[in-house]
Structure formats: C-alpha cells, structure tokens
Length: 165
Image (cartoon, rainbow, N blue to C red):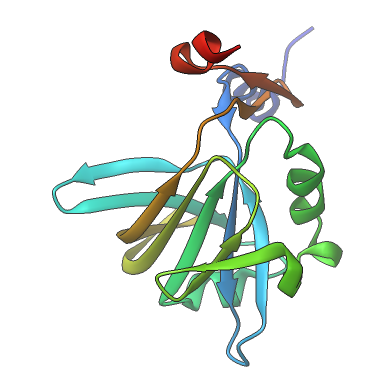
C-alpha cells in the first residue's frame, strides 16, 4: 500500500518531538487571545530573535499576523489542558485570570518560561506566515516541559530538574 506524500510528510514531522507553547496577541480592539504553537524556534542570540509559524487557515490569522507585540509561554508538563484549550478557536480568548504582564505583553501565568516579543519581520512560506520576533524580555522557571510527539502529549525533565527530585 502506497502512502500519500502529504500523509507521509505529516508522519515524519510527527516523529519530531517538540515543546508546546501558547502565543498570545491582541486584536485591533485590544482583546487578547492565545494559540497553541509547536513551531517555536530560536533564530539568533545577537540580536535575540525567535520565530513561529502561523497557518493561513487559522481562524484568528489576522490578529496574530498583524500583531506588533506578542508573547510566548512555554508550557510545563502540567499544561496539557491549556495546550488543548488554546488549540481550539472557540476557546482562544485570554481571560484576565489566565494572564500576567511581561514588558507590557500578556503571557500565560502558568508555564516554564515566558517571552515578550516585538515583530521584527514576516515572511510567507507555503501555506504559513513565518513571524520573527525580537525578544524584549524573558522569564524562566524550573520544572518539566510539556512535549508533543506523534499526535500526543508527554513530558521531559531536564538534568537539573532530575537532581531536585
């Protein structure tokens, strides 16, 4: 049985374990929402740049594509509910109790790390928009990370976290 090339590619990419993040941005009216993203990648240390990819068919494409500032929260191993919530367009609204400020940007209260960014560049690639952000501020906590692998959630503990257990 021959596998469809698109399905084969999806299976290959599913075999690449990633961290799980929630990107937060405000729309033109100032209402904040979040979106689960696993395409976060460091681009440069000097200047500090990172990127993430936004699908053209996203229900909230415009607010995230147009945002000049936005946040990223790296989810800890207890963040699966948040990952699932912000993966659904119907539940992407960010409530006040969910968020805190970092350099004037709303980020989730929970998580291992938060990053506040200003859009540095945008590039089109296939059916996605690559959004490159200049890092304005960061916050990091200890703990195990939420991962995504072959369509499911898991976790990974770092060497320093193993020592503390």
